[in-house]
Image (cartoon, rainbow, N blue to C red):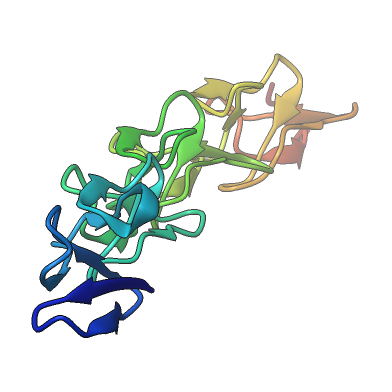
Length: 173
């Protein structure tokens, strides 16, 4: 702490508080600020930090700090923290965020239009490499809903919407 004197007797100013320029009174810094160098005056918390009671602290990943640097919290669904943890940004491409953390969709899923979830493709389609769109299985391949495309070997054949591989019935096909 730093000392101040109102009645000619020096007293220590508690942590998180600062001394006015005349060193006469001890005050608490407002939210988003902390005592400046030498405990005189207040300065804004640095990027990625916030303060409620006059002491700046790091905002842990994946949370972000608001503009006033007074709160630390998660991003909304479909959004994730920027690299500085100073704001939220929309998830892009094949990323989704159900809980404020953008992550690339995996397996046979793609990002929903609002990027809040990873969703499965319908039968006959599979996720593209970027996990942004469902594309038709190649000729001679089929898929079940939420699965990957599989080869359909002769004498079996793939139906028109590429969702089934069935034995060719004699007299048909």
